Amino acid sequence: MTDMLTLLGTKGGPAIRPGGPNPTSSLLTLSGRRIVIDCGLGVSRALVETGMLLKELDLIFITHLHSDHVLELGPLLHTAWTTGLAHQVTVYGPCGTQALWQGFLQSMAFDIQIRIDDEGRPDLAQLVTIVEYGPGLVLDGDGLRVDALRVDHPPVTDCFALKFGGNGKTIVFSADTAYFAPLAEFATGADVLVHEAMLPEGIEGIVRRTGNGARLYEHLVASHSFAAEAGRVAADARVGCLVLNHLIPADDPNFGEKDWIEALQPVWSGPLVVGKDGISVPL
Image 1 (tube, rainbow, N blue to C red):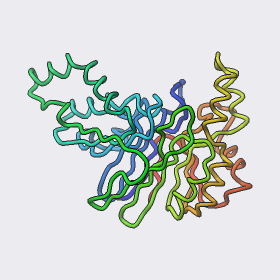
Image 2 (image 1 turned 90 degrees about the vertical axis):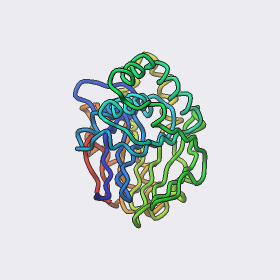
Image 3 (image 1 turned 120 degrees about the horizontal axis):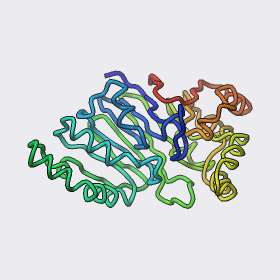
């Protein structure tokens, strides 16, 4: 199993538009484990299109509980179950993940019970273990280590960057965050930094399309990073490669890869991947 990062959904925010990318989710293959990071809308289909069998689902990590990161957590697990999942899956998420999962189980109680009785399936609730985590060491075993760093994503307080280490490689996911200097220390020397990014010019179009545009603008500026800020973190951390993800805007035809590259030129000259749904980055 080749160590690989595959971007399943690269759009920042929950809205979807014709022909546009999906909200945030990624698949990290590391140390023989398949790890899903965040479960935005479309993650189940995107995983299948990588060639992965959903019944092989192994580990899931949720960075925070905004809908574009967690909306399809329950449906992913349920769909995996209906395709033959019969082993334990562990979901690591911030405080509130257990309540989210229990709410999903309650909402699907009729379907789950009918499939247990009629199709002889195991009890889905017994196959999923939820582990709520905070800052610090999250997991260390079987050749995989995961650490978490609380980042700056107001008004959400439980939002965490995640650092995965295994097989001699390190990859860091920024999660959603405003520019946060401690993230550079957290990611120092990482092979890959996956960092969210915005284009200042692109925000204007989003504000025009949105009814509560002024309030949304305030949120975006206070809670997210501009591309140049992501580049600054990557440079300070001396990472091997910067991957831009959770792009804002991601579905505006007026902006393309060259705009992201130009935004980074003053601060980052290293290897760069501008996120697109379905692309893979070898580690």
